[in-house]
Length: 251
Ligand code: 13P
Image 1 (cartoon, rainbow, N blue to C red):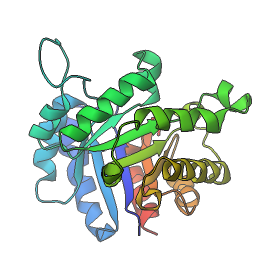
Image 2: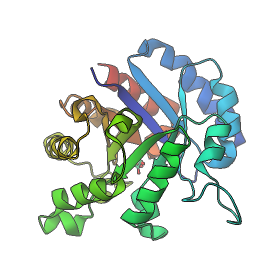
Image 3: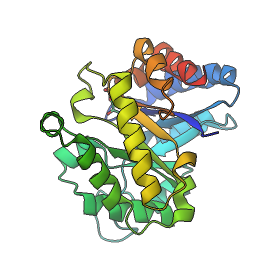
């Protein structure tokens, strides 16, 4: 059985107050998930310590949204994977389309970050996804497979259990447009086949879907055989919505 995972990517949203209100509410409701779903909270880095305190003893996981491609040194403003591990993170997110598009992160930079995450003992949550232009040109699958190929080049097969991949079609992020459950399933299937060809135990790897996941569409998406949970943006900032999405992953 693959792990079902629902991760909250707060992006650059939130405050100390939100940490104090939202995290205990999620923690309380997560008890009903009976450990059938791994819940991961990914706040802005400054709030990692606060979220960690609120999660203490809960079994919920913590993730950082981005890390540097170096481990330490004269890189003003950067935070390393080793530091994320030091403050108690379980996961590091990498390859998000916002980082690719707004910060110019290439597949090669993302591969370096994947290496730093693994050498720090954290788990990788790698985002892949095509733009609308790429989809309309019929290149969606090729783009997603290339992103996975490059990011995971050099990763040992034994590390597969520390890699989670989130398929996030760029055109579905924050737009209210979701991929249909069938389209998302088709991409997840293609990705799993590719991971297998790369030598990973793909059947044991959790593949998440992200992009306008809401309580009313989560059930249909998570019911697909190759969709093992979700990476949630906007809806992760509302306790009731996020909890309903976590429940849908359990069903
Ligand atoms: P939305 O759920 O707001 O579309 O964001 C998805 C996302 O980018 C999560 O990483």
